[in-house]
Length: 211
Image (cartoon, rainbow, N blue to C red; front, top):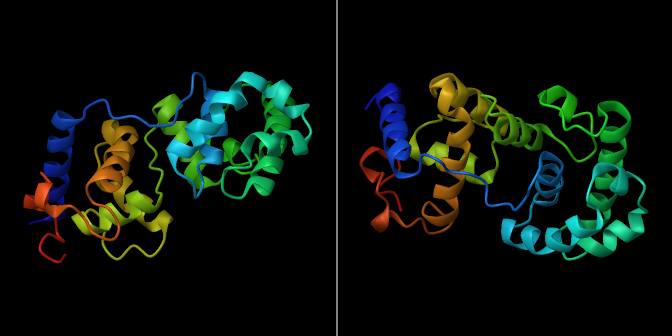
């Protein structure tokens, strides 16, 4: 099977099976999504959603967060992984968001990365989810699933995987393909024991039979 055929089958399946796939993080505006994605680094979406429920009641906008003490922010997120660093990042992010971007979450990936706690993956999530830009955020699920399916080949870093995926995927589906890969990796193609028996895309999976 050629790489072109594999991508065609991938897009055809998920376009029908889950055409409106979206993040499982809870948010009501771009600022809240940015906070949630920063918190989600090396942490489950479920845990983040538990924390942000109260967090967003206290910090309703970038200005309130920018004016907060790091210690107070820590108290709201202490059950999240790496709460000390993330508390500092959140306050620092909010300050830049207010001072440089007038409290409007930017659409540009480079602008997003000017803020603490916002790396390339986080920036791509915001750009794709909020602004539907054709960028691919590569987390552990995307990296693993893309390689297993054969959508990427010998990618050594998330950036290499990102470049391969955006090269072959139709531009109009890149922003949603990120969610297709994440959700498939979260519920079917899990890390240790992938559920190949119930997988509906094993007919074009390069790794089927290896587990």
